[in-house]
Length: 408
Image (cartoon, rainbow, N blue to C red; front, side):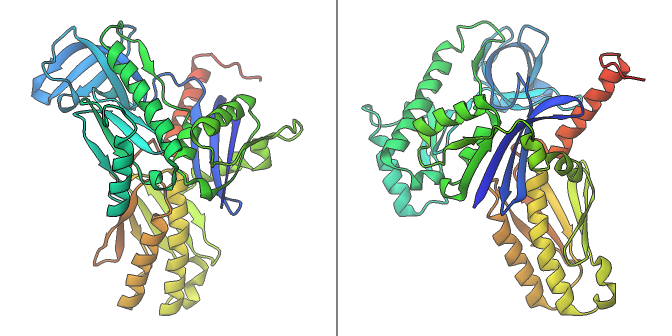
């Protein structure tokens, strides 16, 4: 069972909101966000076409106030022309020299549904059984007097829908459809830069994707966060536990749970295991490399059984670190070599089982002849280390430009 802790703290002099998911009192997932994040992923706003670059199959847009966007033509409306204004959704925030990426097919994710600008398709998650898919598809078609989704909206029924009541499903379905209708009807009538939809707070998105029966407690020291979660629970997630407000001003919530040291450890490459072995985690542009080392077990490293136990222990910690650091893309794990094929297959199966506990889709691809395990994980938001690095650079820039006064 998990506990979610949501609090405000400072990192590198910048105020941030942090949501930490704990399992058996151990942190397993973290999300942080600056408090003034206007143009973040999921935001839907109007933008004007500034230039179309057919040679790179992209268009460049702007919001009228100096912010520019990159739109792949495959995600653009038909008949695109310069000066055209239409709604777009941010799919990737600005990173280095890369512009903010957008799509002209806004998507609204809910706990049970995902609605997208499309052609009227109604589908159910392939993770659902055939019988469940049939039941839910029939139920959704009954929500509208028209007999289902409109001809311009694609609807995906998520796996979570199988555990929800018909009333819960209908409430969210109609709420999302109302937002979608508003975006569609006003998107071409508003001036460039008008915000049509702001995504739910990141901590709510994080909780929304976790099965309600896996959350034991939600605690925060922020009254506004508690109010947001209470309204969400009342309207769309009544099976979730009520949020508890922490009120001890003498000991801030982030200190109670040791979040400052937690963020420091996330930046460390070396992670120790209880057996005396350790992991070395290194991020590159193309992938993340994780090396498993026997460490203090050197006097026994030739024993197959000892190596097997070390690798199995490492597998658990690797899966936790992948979630904790929010690593994505390709992850290559160099385990300590084993000779027994049965041990190798058991390790692969255990890693696949552990990765299924991650709410973000991930899985084992294969193990190479050199016993390097290939893992992939979908990217939904930047790695925690990348966000911390941005905050650090921002702090250093402010010091250099004199925006922060340092006492001598």
